[in-house]
Length: 198
Image 1 (spheres, rainbow, N blue to C red):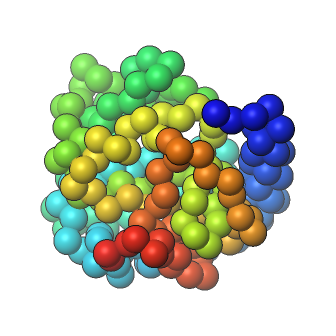
Image 2 (image 1 turned 180 degrees about the horizontal axis):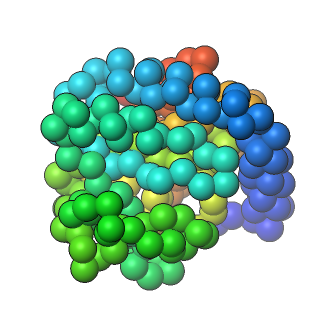
Image 3 (image 1 turned 135 degrees about the horizontal axis):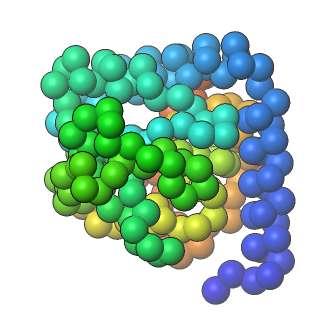
């Protein structure tokens, strides 16, 4: 059970690192995003994956648009998260570029009626958005817990996050429900958890 103190510390850390991310110049964010995409594409997890779960960037997140282009050229199947309640998320394969709308937190989400539902066990690689991370591959999101609840269902997937180095913290207190990432990709490095087989 999280204490009020630990929740407050996490909230402050998240606010601090989101601010650090937003302080990056647009040119830096674009250049760093491309470097992160290069690292992802060079990974064995990406090369082996047939079905990849991505996100559409908002609020200064790592932009994976170039990764989408590369993956589609390689005939990989790209799926995206859709929040269908305050607690539940599913993965959708959009049928075309008209299958998008603004959803939770202003995040671009696929429209369910114009997409195909993909089961979590069909996903080979998940790239999660990230607000804060540490070298042990602990990750913090926006705090709503959607990925924490969804990722345990992705039984066949390598689970990674994309982040800028300015988002790194010395350590993150991990709760029992937090899913440690297998890898975290930044513009400078690829961090791997001790449990990662990648």
